[in-house]
Image (cartoon, rainbow, N blue to C red; front, side, top):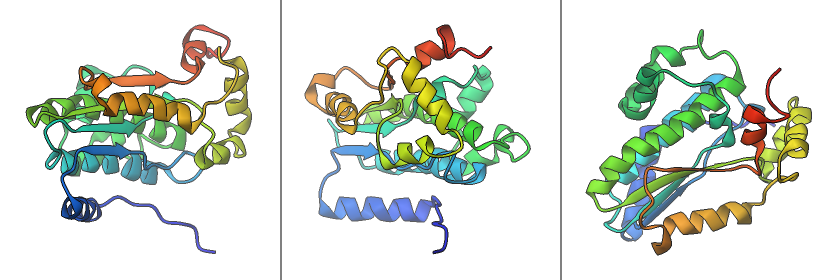
Length: 224
């Protein structure tokens, strides 16, 4: 069996938008596509998780209906990345999508590790959504990110059984919740952000990781 190839292209995203708008008005978007550090190379992670998300936000932001809402699934990993400079934050948030991968901070000599590629991509997702919320707002629509922790999905199973599995299991054990999450729990937050009860929420990122990030910065998971 040949390894699965992942990529993001403007043509494929535009085709998706055309297909969706042919069915009807676009009132909601949930973007959960992504690849993990165990699955692919740093370059592929940046292409799919960072560039691909920027394309989806841009293309669907051009057609989202008034009153519509969007949710992008980011990750707790973005919250474990050390602080970037204000210039780097702005670059990730506002650089035109087709120029993103040309940023100096994203070149192969700067991003050599798949985990770092994943972290910077997910940080970029939340920054991008904050910037896109301004544009979406002019159409009367909202968009937010959810940054889940270890949620028991096929992707998480790849990580738990991969080379970083021990570290992921330790995260679960030392978190305040002491367990991983479920897709339904993420869905509850998604429903809030997509529905009328979330009408005052836009450009925001919701970290839901059972306390893993808290333990990473201030608890037993803190780097020595």
